[in-house]
Image 1 (cartoon, rainbow, N blue to C red):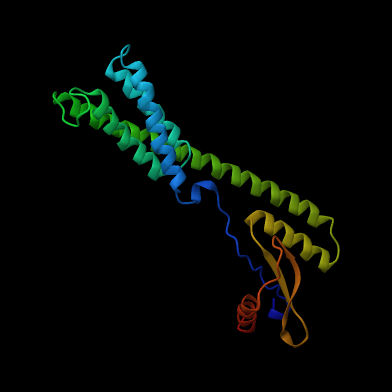
Image 2: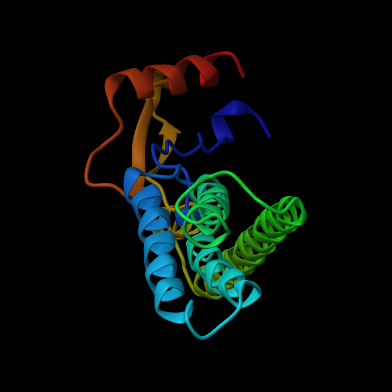
Length: 212
């Protein structure tokens, strides 16, 4: 294939992303603090009736709820806060970070490790589930693309269908460029965005094409 037969590639400005790929926001950290606060309130209500090991389970539920949002930082923060709150509010002497019985240090260590393990496994499971959903979506789009392409005639229609499906698959803006007389590239099809490629983007595409 020579470069006069080449379809110059798409120009995209948006990369595929999901909620898990985004950095944790202050709302995520606020949620972790609120979750630990709710667990502490529930533990105060349960304290007269249940032993300390049962209160640990309440805090682990808060860590699990935080980890289910898919952010590692807030999940780690919830794990650490849970240990601190459990120590301060319920371990003798209460309302003090000092510990009268050395065995509680082992309890804190195990509680923190278990909380971190739960958060890690929960986030990993959610990442795998979202990855599987993205894979299924792309497979369905590609299958739909091949079916629609098989019934499409004419270069202009083929380019339009291809651009639309590429924009769906990669969740971005796509432009298909072809050379006109004199070797200048022109947009022949576009999808996934409300704007045409900028002059700077066209200039980069032209530079690549000229040096093909």
